[in-house]
Length: 488
Ligand SMILES: *Cc1c(COP(=O)(O)O)cnc(C)c1O
Image (cartoon, rainbow, N blue to C red; front, side):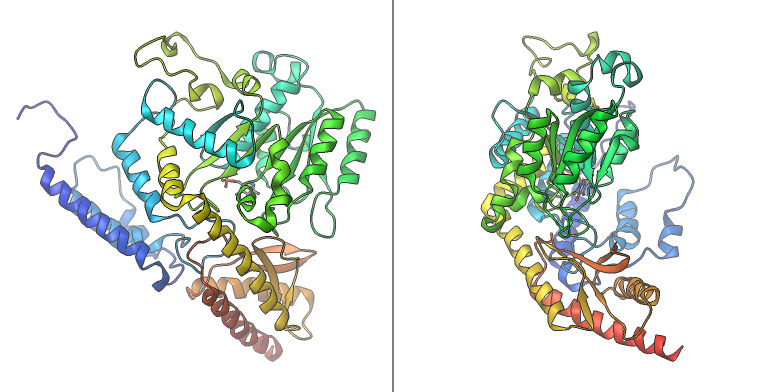
């Protein structure tokens, strides 16, 4: 022993025992996902136990792990449970967890250089290019999610379509008047991206949608013409493959054709819809993604990779690199040695240090095969149709508020004779009841002024019986609350 400090334990076997216990508990946690309430809100005692001053001295790992077991593990968001239907939260998968854990052991920085993690990320990106129909010459990078993928894609689009050198001179000098187009159902990450890009949120023109909540392409054409007439510079249009509200898939081919004719950058937000292409009956609806200049999507949603993992693909690899490459002398590459391995991922996004996300994606895709993952996507689409039919059978007590086009079902409980406001309040309370009672965790949205119970199916553990239980509970709680309304 020396007196030089290290963070390694003096006794590896004691640490190993805690690891083994943690792995056993983790496996039990996933294996028992069906048998717990979907959500248990963190109680004040648990939060209090975690609230303390900066710990200056060490705590034994056994004690830290005990606190984790009692005060952290039981109070997760709940998306590993089969009755989690809120927002668009993937369920993760056990084999992917192994990849996540092993990546932490290796602790690679995947900003660049010559090591195996860089090669594995390239392999995952090559698979994605093949799956999405992108050319082999396209570039890509793994991201924390579609929000960051969108920011990267929009940066490349802005720089490629600006009049001057935006990276050097800034937007005020080089990118005046640039405007882009996305539908009113597009994700809020576009507003954020355009704010960060210095173009402003108002530079995203909001295109109306049709009755099926798909972008209105006639309106898109009129808006482009009007903006040009006003001296603005339309530079990009977005098609969404699977909107968050209802799962609508825009007419991607038509948006692409408009972009080609108008010389606009064509971007597809396929955060979860990218993998709808794995299902025969939806393949044609998303096939035109392959013609995009860029697309962003998530592994952590419908592909079940543990959080977080997304990807952005860019057709023009040169434009992608030009938008981000900015290395100084201490980051110079080399012909040989560890500083080889060009191209480096740090030249394709805003981050220099990056985690080894590709390993959990690789473990997931290899373990289940793309066909096995596609079977989950297909199952969720079937389940959404089933749920839509069950809702229809319970008319007029239940009402479908949007067509079921993919994996999302929006419906409401209709209290007899109640005002629209009272009905909206009832449905909001009903969803909170379902969550607080631990029965199911749908989310809400508003469609045409009506509060919808929104059920998004991206979970490989969800069974048809979970949906039947959901409907039973909605009817029971709806009746109880309706009775109270009548009594008021
Ligand atoms: C989830 C989602 C996003 C944002 O992706 P993150 O991975 O959460 O950053 C963007 N667009 C759509 C359609 C989404 O579903």
